[in-house]
Image (cartoon, rainbow, N blue to C red; front, side, top):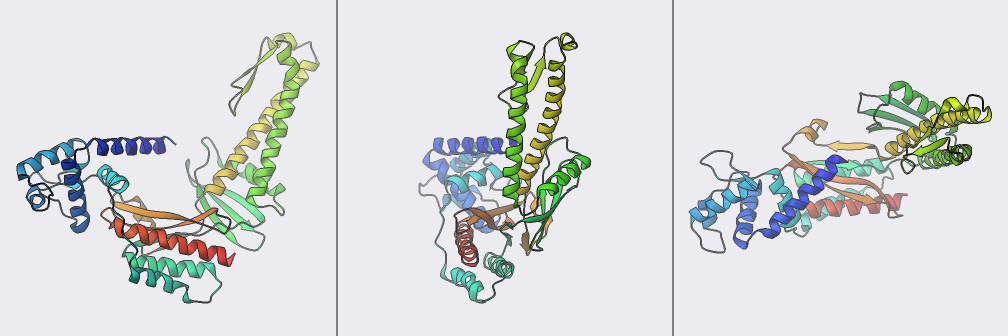
Length: 364
């Protein structure tokens, strides 16, 4: 969440900088980025003097470039070389200055041709579409297939490290799916086994969505039991709620030693503690299920290896697609160097996503 908030702040700052630029600075910035995307080479001031709408000297353009470099939008790979856009500069260009072209006829025909087969196998169709997308864009294509929504026969969590885990879903129709997710902090392999055992005891005939509904009801039931038991203690001033508005509220007992001879209150406190423990376990399980549903499903990588995603010099243009109920069920995208031809790639990815959505809706 912190990374996401930071990204939003950076984008907002970049948009503000763009709005505050004068026409000359905006044109210099746009031409540097477009020149870099076209050739991959730094763009110099003398090159820009030939293209600028306003006739200005190379020295003036160099001063503008220095200002843009100070703002973090351009960088100079060598002292005497021209400028290239920084990652922040590319982000700002894509968000605020990118002119997206129309989908070319040949690109459309090549993608449409993937649907020529009469095969009902959605995986085969997605494989063909991914291959076509890779061929059209000369980049690596990514297709996130829709997640399987069917009754689950068995579920298992496997720890892959302190911040990564694998969930194995075995569906009643024989389909098996592995998903990677980031477990809640503090979870151990034993707590994951306990969560899986509890879910498997409830799992018969239920989908992931059904399981989440069951767990939510269990949490609400436990919370009501705790409220009823704690009511008298709070009313009598023997206890007080702390953090009641939070998910992880606590009941603070005042002078618990005074309850030792009170019998009923002491029994209630022990029961409340037991219910609290059970409530926290169920909240953990609910969070596991939520992360499982959000986790990456079946992925088809064509023309690339997973390690490509870890390269700082790569970009991903991705668009979600929806099923017949207008629910986002997957995504398609193109991975390539940061100097992708974004204006051409964006409509290709957008059209492909629409095509996949129609395919999924028709085959449902």
